[in-house]
Length: 191
Ligand code: PRP
Image (cartoon, rainbow, N blue to C red; front, side, top):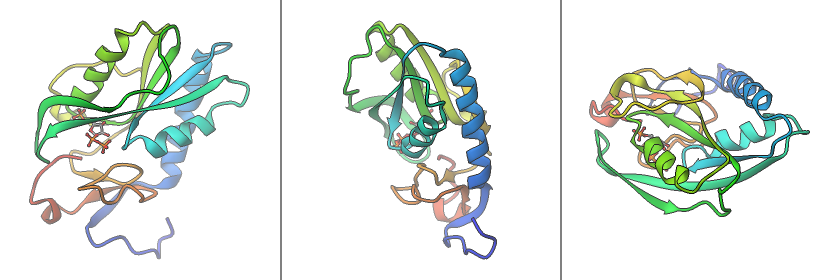
């Protein structure tokens, strides 16, 4: 983002700009590539938040790697402050995961409920391997402990939007990760 470009009024500040996100995606892609030599890998992007991350990660992987792309969509019940703990499947993967090397690609892990739900669901389908890659780790309010294989960045303890992450479906399109102004969200703290 150029320094002269104005931020939307609801945005407090940029936390990670497009260049930093790009460097992070490249680092994650290099680590993933080194673990998947000679084996096809399916990136399973978790919609909607991981839409851009999945697309950028896929293109950052070496061309010689056999990369497949699929998506799955989930949502958690609850308000903006806290989820109810119940996650529901909105759209399943298009392809079978059985016998495949699956990398779940998430934009953010916060309470950990979404990833826990997904890993349980997918593990029951007998993939050859099941790993996780998360762009943003937000460790402050974990409700379940989970292991993430590839972590990009640590999120601040504030409401983050942009690069796929939304507030009431807005701001996903911002090319950077940004902090939302506190008065916009009424002091609530959830990405
Ligand atoms: C967000 C985010 C993760 C999940 C993480 O998705 O994209 O999937 O929450 O939260 P947790 O670790 O606290 O469970 P959301 O349900 O907001 O849907 P979206 O991806 O469509 O924005």
